[in-house]
Image (cartoon, rainbow over all chains, first blue to last red; front, side, top):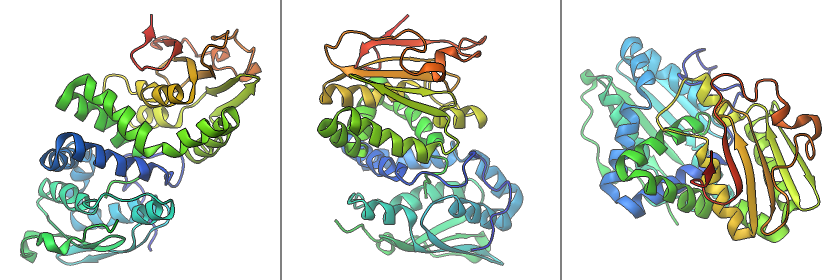
Length: 170
Length: 186
């Protein structure tokens, strides 16, 4: 993977990569919201987070276009431990080819069970961020390997087919 | 994808979302049910089985991952386990990045460790100054003592001896023999 673009991450830490055990808490947070508040609330949580918490990223994407999107994702995955991801910048889209998802890999390696809907979070969060920046987001795959696409309107991507997002095996 | 690099940022944002959605009871339930009883079961299992040596193993590992610059010190004596944070990696991340979506981020630590320690038979004495500095003393429930004299357990690493422990703007929250995030004393 290419070196991350300096300054591509809006929130920065003093350490180069995150602590993977935090992935446990992300999975547990999703499980808690689904159990307590239901699926619609979980989707709203992710959409709200995409628009609000990620607002600084969205502003970067809005002003920097697809190169900013690609730069962000390169920096993002460089700071996540254990993943294997290729980021492709194309004329009308950015594709993330996630060969090894760091999150699913860490959960499985430690005997944690991802919630079945886990991989849908990337779609609900990513599409909210894309919508805020005039892009379209699509997701294909899941359960450890997938492809994300962030595209300009000119790409005219077909609507997201929910069946294209795999459920996570128990 | 939500990442672990900036975990403390979206974790704090999540507290605010819960508070707006279901009020304080939902935030408390999140810390206990999602973090204590689900995410951090490995901590509870270790401490329940091994007591203070289990605390040393759990926080020795997790704090080294979160704070490789060693902004913390762990010390222990018979019947007391103590951590002093001089630069909390979690609160420090929020301060450096100017993130605030919830009224008091520091409450989350007592929010999940309090119930966990109760289930393991321990109580907590604690103070934090909201500036990334705090100290914790954990003793078996019913053990005498608590709020040891400054330096008595951690020596010169005691956070209370830091020159900026009570700097202007630093508001102290204090807990005495507590297991509940709402058991703050003025």
